[in-house]
Image (cartoon, rainbow, N blue to C red; front, side, top):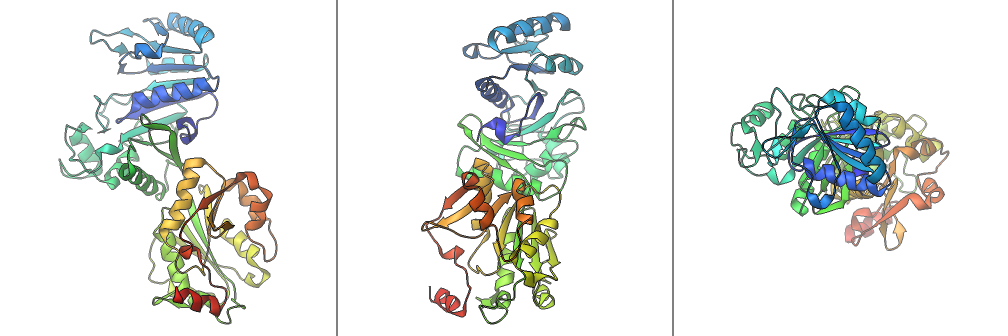
Amino acid sequence: MRLTDALGLGAREVVALVGAGGKTSALYQLARELRACGRTVIATTTTHMWPPPPAEGWPLALGAAGEARNSAAAQALAAQGRAFVAAGPAPSGRLLGIAPEEVAGLASLADAVLVEADGARGLWIKAPAAHEPVIPGAATVVVPVVGLQAVGRALDATVAHRPERVAALVQVAPASAITEDMVARLLTHEHGGLRGAPPQARVVPLCNQADDGAALAAGRRIAARILQSPGRVQRVAVCSVQAAPQACEAWQPSAAIILAAGGARRYGRLKQAELWHGQPFLVRAVDAALASSVAEVHVVLGCEAGRLAALLDERKDARLRISVNPAWSEGQANSLRMGLASLSAHIQSAVFCMADQPMLTGREIDALLQRHAASGATIVAPRCQGTLRSPVLFARRHFAELAALQGDTGGRAVIRRHPGEAEALDVEDPRPYADVDTTRDYEELKGN
């Protein structure tokens, strides 16, 4: 996925990049992607910024007078489709920023305006001072950037710009080891990543420097922490702008819906309460979902709902919600519809889990979320030996169609209608996806 897609950029955007750990690299990467799509781009700064590298070939529109700058920018856009706008050179060799209120005028000239709205002295993490960031009021998207290479390092001046300010905001001692939780709190703090963001702007943090597997995993966990706490941030990008700019991930709030309402007629007794290694199937399904990156876990009960709900009394996680379907006997579609109706409005995808896969863990659910974040596929399902299995992820665009299903029908009917939108996640080990329909299945699974 490209960076423009990971950030969710649409038409006529004014993007303000703040923070540390790759703002400038991200700005130029966005410009390259937008130009490749035939869109005109203006890059600028409201603080100070080094001129674009000569190899990039940016036409400059410089000058203290806004009208003259805009005229020069319009000419450059007509000739080359892009322009770098600044108030002029500074003695340091940097370019002087324009006033934030002048950005609105630039927005009328180009398809996209990219603004570097604060500085970080080339470091990986920062907290803004009282006078920054200088975000234009015309901004439609604010991108707080952090460098993932800071995670695990000491919070000091070698990796952080204003480390004492960072420590104060996230309430840790100076020189503490930088943790994922600290990064998540900083990116969503009203005086951190959210500082100065106009009310109408979307805020999309960018966890950059996912240069290796460990950093990528850290970025994913930071995204999950942010999205599990409802707030202004509803999208997080994770990537390595310099090493792999076409392999970005877009993380949005997801839920797990555990369908556990059936009467297990084929099994002969309440299957959801059957024990596997000392734990009921239902408890194992809930624990798997809670161990994943989802923001909400919804359990739909029906047959013997009181007995099953009691099994979950010790699960105090705030993400867990339980619904009871009084019409459970009408078929799976009815319970599926109830699960969808219970989701919060900001949830953008749902992973539908069954309560009869006792070997499923949070890793398998996260694998679906990761593929969805990386590819943008609206349906993701595991494929074992050529056959699609549960659980299955559906993006919000399919929710209405899922809710319209009737009888004992599940999501496979929707998958069949949209083969071009479904992405299979091939798995080598089929055991976590094994389901138990009969007592014979159960005995065979125990034997494995």
